Length: 527
Image 1 (tube, rainbow, N blue to C red):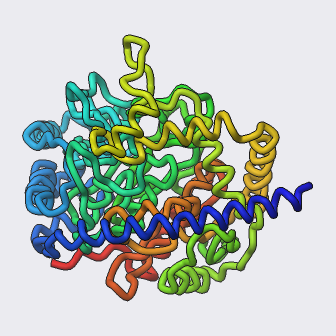
Image 2: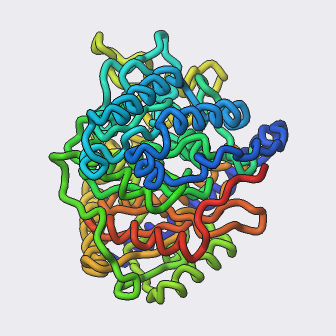
């Protein structure tokens, strides 16, 4: 029986792969047309040396009075004003308020009313540092539409728990950044703010759904970014823009205060706010500030001997027969990383089920907020049939992913046999056990994040199945990060995923620092 299921699944995969190929016949010309209209301009050079310092270094200098918070915030404000006209990554800023908050911090530090430098390092590790936040997370008084076109602009009435933690740690919120409509795409565009572009090549995507954060951070327009990750939403943009994007272990960071919302009991095991930065040493600093005091236990900083780690790797997903071949430049990077870490090649055969288990789990989440969700009056604004028809006629105010989420949920919840769903749930648990048994408390797994580097705008639509390289780790609840390890032949950043067992995020951070030391880490976009 299991063999029959495997054969059927393989046949479905090949059919789906063929459908993606046919879809590409329509996507590619449109993508080429849109991208070719974008002028290939370079970003202004980075001139202020403060923009080239890590958050860890700047925080220490601010606490000691060696650098003023106002100077740091002003440097990032100026850089945002330089690069955003090219990147289109900012939804709404609060530059003047941020500068005033920085001045107040400087005054209190000068007066000595905040405590010693040592105590501030423990209680307010982000003191005086500018932080950008993905617009789908609530920042009091700021836009919180998640890229959705609404009759009235939605403004957050309070802070999401993770934003409160950032502020309590001394961070200064600088802006909210662009996201696709309801965070439902792996590219960042919507009908409110528009298309966000990649700083390394404006004709390429910055990824999604945290593409606004990634574009700004890579361009030195932001120091630290609070992102979200439900299916690679933090890791893919980081990979495409040459920075670090981390999906923490489940419930380390509070998953609440996000738009769209969900009240499914499994929401927090699949979705989490994430951390993004240019320098590997800033990952534990930022995640430590974001951490929910009542959340799951996690180790963030612990001395690690890299040579003592057990490292494993795979160059592709099996192959599964579904995803596209991994680009040779990415395969080379995986091998270089594996060679440097003396990693052992493995073959986790249950990864062939990654798409099946991930899509079915995500689409079975109860009461995920979509354009079809009931409004305060108890009725939805639209129906599936009406919205699909409006989209086909060019009359919809929503983008394709938001329109199609309804039909996909309907199919999974009404037409897939319960026996099939039970089988996939069992495979999920077995795959989770495969990983936890393999990695233990001293192992990491090296894996591609996506088969290619940053592609032209809108080309994600015939590559949707390739996102299972990232989505599977949301499904099985493992922490994972995208780490910059070089450039491809087109001078676009290459990132690889580093994965660990739940609660072992510090192993990922240690490997990220080692890879940064060995391969160089973030490199400023061409100017």
